[in-house]
Image 1 (cartoon, rainbow, N blue to C red):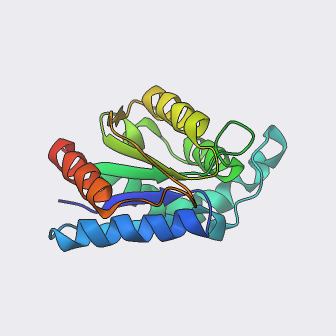
Image 2: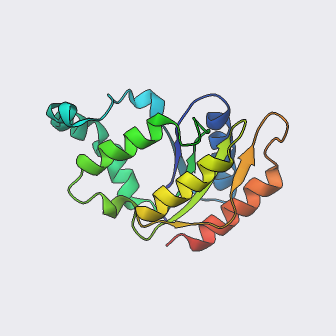
Length: 168
């Protein structure tokens, strides 16, 4: 099985949660990689930035290769104004224009969604909608954590088990 890709839209608590998920995946003998989207330093996508597409295609080549080979994903984002962190949408936009067949990255693959956020209910709905649009099969169970409700190890374990069961 190829690596499970864990995409985190922010650092801080979502990155910590991403590493907890990776640890759980690794503990059952599978492999996971964490893609820290902010560290990619992608410029804001717009029709005016398409002149940077060639350079970014080269920069994203190994990540896109991991996306294509991955049987499943975990996507984490806090809620920003009732939606995803801008870095996540920006990343997906660049992947869609920097690949010949961006649907090969996502179509038919299992995805788990998680958020460490003060609110988080809206972002989980938005991620479910967006990832489904990309062709992913989003798990029914999701994880929402915050300062008052930390992520339970048992919840992470259950979600990882279901994700691995559905990974093709």
